[in-house]
Amino acid sequence: MRAIAIVREDISGCNGEADVAGIRALARRMRLDLSTRDIHVTSELSVLLAHLTSACADVVLVPSEGHLRGWMNEVRRMAAVWTVEPALCWPQGGGRVHAITRPDRHIGVAR
Image (cartoon, rainbow, N blue to C red):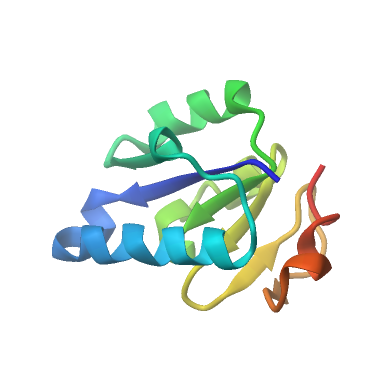
């Protein structure tokens, strides 16, 4: 599954590098296709959400739910949302939030 990552500088603060490392580790563990160019560190969330429409991503990775505060439902219309801490999945299009446990459980979750 193809993934993009969003790390908001205004929320991460000085923990930005650690947040990116956590996202990379989750992507590796869950066998997601996450290239370096698809990791976006910014405070301009609206610009990234516009990019998401053309990115064709199955999963949006964020360090925590707070990085999408106010935008979660909008993002879920286009992709599933996975958080690093706690390790949770918000399925694309709605549905119950559940824990991320192993790759084979989540491969069919998105698109």
